[in-house]
Amino acid sequence: MSQTKKIYWADKLGVISAVLCVIHCLAVPTFLAMGISFLSNPIIAFFFILIAFISIYKTTKQNSTKGISIFLWLTFIGFVISILFEEQAEIFEYGMFIFSSLIIIGHFYNMRSCLKS
Figure 1 (cartoon, one colour):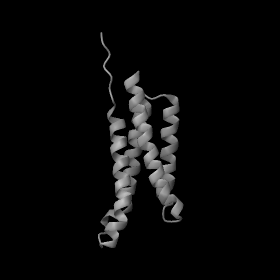
Figure 2: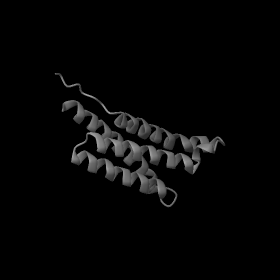
Figure 3: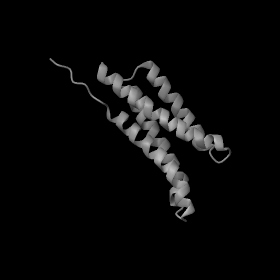
């Protein structure tokens, strides 16, 4: 019997949501300058946190090595801290980009790991 290799939906969801988060973070200042302010609503930030949590939880629960699991959870914690404190200091604004990128890398690495096994 041949074993099929599968990329889990949670990894795909994690990558897509983190990419959308980066695009959102880059686009909001432009839209605010144009007078479009609904994208800066805090509910959208909590939506990204929720999707990141679900994708990382499902990824680490399904098929992930311990190192990848730890990496994804640490990047999630950094991502949440960056979002919660983005208004206090500019460093947290950059942290959102960094941690979103690290979440993308973690999910890609997990997908690659799943395909190899």
